[in-house]
Image (cartoon, rainbow, N blue to C red; front, side, top):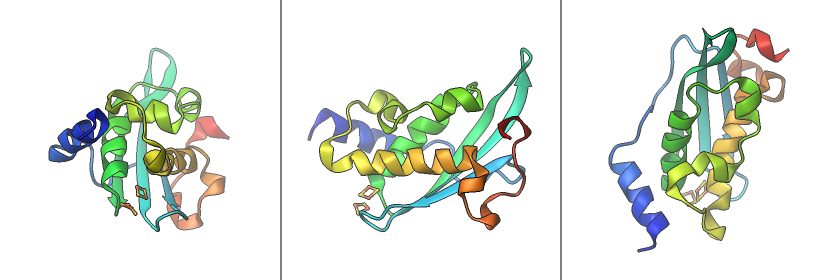
Length: 138
Ligand code: FES
Ligand code: FES
């Protein structure tokens, strides 16, 4: 087993931040054309030191184990980031300590990145995916 697979397995044994945030400020959903899997991400913002930052992030994944592991990692490292900072994170950034995404698994990370981007840009997601538009993102 590669180091990456071992870390994915470890993350899957205790995935963090799974499930809906009922009072979320933003939600984004994306499906992967490569494999048919789906990912939804919720974001809750708060004011900290005069900045609007992510207080909580959560996800729900339909299908892919690697995407679940990356989303678990991503929801932890998104905490405290502004929307602008979060928008700059690549699939690889979001994989954090899991390490380099193997070529076959890059689209799994991109599923997480896509859900995050859709949450940050509500205009890009479907109407049912935006309970309220975060006001710093207009
Ligand atoms: Fe989604 Fe691989 S096709 S888990
Ligand atoms: Fe398709 Fe992972 S195999 S998202």
